[in-house]
Image 1: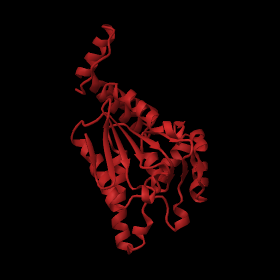
Image 2: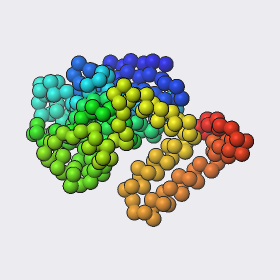
Image 3: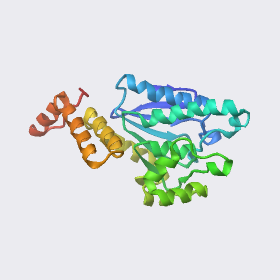
Image 4: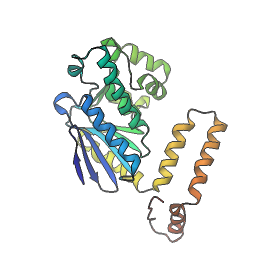
Length: 263
């Protein structure tokens, strides 16, 4: 199934993987209000049903993943309109962060400002060797408002995050890999294929198990170790009665691939 919202192109890929492409290449895939709403509606729709088992998020074209908010649109906004629009952006960022299904970013070019914040809210990212990254907001009289001060610091450490954010310093794909912003660098022509391959590996596993493990990692990192381990056990216990758990053990003993149904 293919679906093309005004600014977001959706394509089903093999293995119950969904490819979501920010589709405004003429403005480096910058997000305006319509884009934010399209992204929100898509990610929020996933809460109602199991349309896919993994999502790959990328940008159209070869130059940019996403350059952040569309500043041409913002130039006409008064203070109240700016705040109202940013509430829509906040909803967009939350919808990505709160997605129960794993989300992998395929960073095909520049990921600046809100674009980098989107990357950091995905579960992990692969990037083209030509990709560039930056949180440039303080050079515009604002600051990161999509979680960047928190997610970048958690990825690269407090001191490096302060350097990058306070100096609005761009950094390379090689630095992003070394600092843990992305998991892997790919040749530009191989990025999407390699990211989709990772998504298929995830999708082949029991979907309820993947979701519970994702939630346990994310929530547990904000707890002390003893509490986080209790959280993990609660998640583990929820899987014991599932059909997928029984199927996984049967398949192992029968030396075949399991057929997970998400129940």
